[in-house]
Image (cartoon, rainbow, N blue to C red):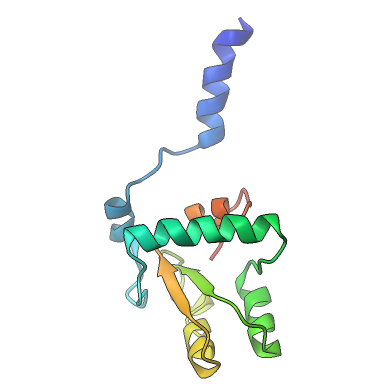
Length: 122
């Protein structure tokens, strides 16, 4: 009996099935430029996983904005499917003013998972 419940629990823990890169592009905001390619998206997720292991990550709009204002250097990765757009539309402008690189990835749920969070993050 215990063996029968394990696959069901694993399916529930995963939640919704993963969408492909092409399917994720359907949910993008119009301001999501420059959008990372499929290959670059995978590399960014890998980099974010490494950074979260070393506690070198800033998660969430408020925290990212605070550290950009303080002058901290790094790469800003934004989720392209975040709604409403007003939540984070000022972040790219701040990055351009301070010469920080930034890119959009198509999914906030994948970004949150790469950052080690159970919740989606922008």
